[in-house]
Image (cartoon, rainbow, N blue to C red):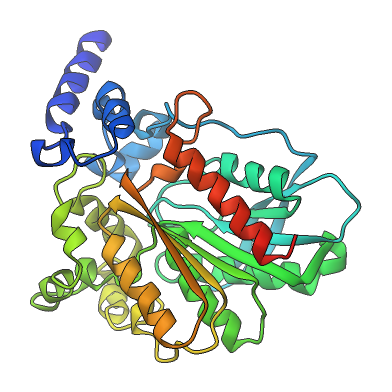
Length: 357
């Protein structure tokens, strides 16, 4: 009976998750093959409730093209106090060989503020630590639905400030800090870049990977929702893609920015939800924005980068052609994609350069 049920679900997924004909010849051939051979048979987390997902997260995670990453000199888990609301969160500290003190990069994982954890970007964190010779702190921020907007952002910023205030204890260089993250982590990086400027924390780099910078196309009421979406053609371009359709974003937002207790109503015009709405874009950290050609958030990321440039900030951007939203995760040495490994190479070099290493 179990085998029959599994087969039925697999067949249903294969049919409903097929790549639309309009996209097949535009996508990177490696991604098409990877998706057709493996990804399309995976039920997505947003196709079930968060309660169902948590019973067996591996059943809804596309891990075939991922890997744990290279060995590094030392890995330690540390508990960090956070303030909004008060509590403690775990972070994982990757340390290279050497005596230090070391420059440090803080990573905020992706997963829509609902999914993910310290395994999500372990391969990338380990790669940066190993290749660049820098400490990497991966932050296990608190997630929805238990902790809604903007708790995760405060968790991450509290972590940066905690390490900076205790630089000697953590053997880091407080004047050589960079931050970054993928998807939800990219969004929080954008927000934290503003927070750093406002609180006098000098950042060497803000690395935003496929970030959301204007959530109004997902959380605003009509007609504003559609009006904002029309500004970013990439939303309509791939809104029905099988690996991350527009409805998947809505699933995340229903948990992280829920209607209950007025959270969503307050967030619609809050710059911390949509950093595109920030009042002051001057004197922000050096920024590198990574985008994927076939990603809902591609165009809002580009517009955000242009806005940073217009206000005199140092900004570089790179769009990886033919790639989906989470392509950066798929960097397995054999089963992954060349462009994902290129992304790892590129970001390692970007961080090395930013810290003057």
